[in-house]
Length: 76
Image (tube, rainbow, N blue to C red):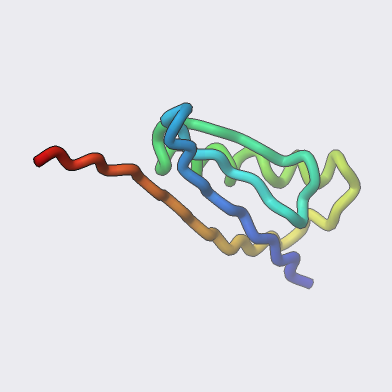
């Protein structure tokens, strides 16, 4: 049986980092300034984390949602 989880990656403009979290996996949160490194960290940390909190952890299938909003101030 496959276990589907959605991970949200949101750019924190103030802290200049990507934040990974999931509404389905309470308490899961990681951050890094590199999106690619954060994705790899999620892949490594998530199975152990969900196993530790008692959620199904075999055959994990992830869906990623990303959001990056930037403020641009133009003069002139």
